[in-house]
Length: 342
Image 1 (tube, helix red, strand yellow):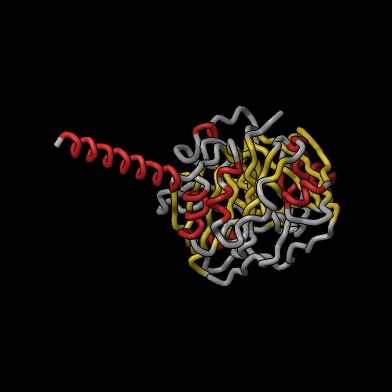
Image 2 (cartoon, rainbow, N blue to C red):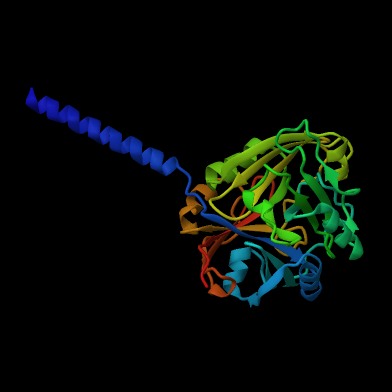
């Protein structure tokens, strides 16, 4: 009787261990932070001037990379790349000029609902002053003008926003939060006009499919959601009839990742399936993880996800020593790297 009791207890313990192992294997290995957003440019000096003089970013590093390991990381043969890291407040972008090979240009008729669309949202302390400054520097409008989102929208009401383009046609946004919205630090202005980056936004075809990637695979958490429509949203996005399902995602630190699903109109064009890092629409979100290789098996099970030839060790000239470049279900790129090394 005692033998059967011990056997039953042992079987119960083994079953609990098996269930624990299954839960552990299924749980996502969360990225620890969003480090930066990589923006493709064609003339690095011109772009550094624009971001520093107009938007008050500060250049903190500049590097040129080439060689076999970088080719395997980015999946581009013969790659030679110049990168300037620019900082605003706590956040950073990386301006990326591909010297070789020559990639395809950004389509001149790009619209905000095309699925290669991506922007960064720069927080400002005073929208009127920010818009006047952008007009002074003759930036190209992507919105008809600054828009104040209506109060009937509980999550977005009172936010002021404006889309414009940098010298290469990349979309950018300036955004001002009203009291009570956004992070508290965006209300602590200290006399600065441009404060930092709240998020990068990407257009997706299916929010649920994107959540399966960013939330379930990478471990970002959902921080909020909204459905935006009306004349203000149309004029902000410059898309007639725009109705968007917006989902905000965040890691433990760094800018958020905002999913923009156009419920209407559903005429946005997909990212070309043969896109690579030399193409001018190939932005990337750099995320930090203790060990990118730990994410690789789960990501490899997703068709067309991994761009790199596996997790690649590189010289830490860009602040990381190991990386893995992956695509989400729509083709947007994320570079998963070890925690930043100085």
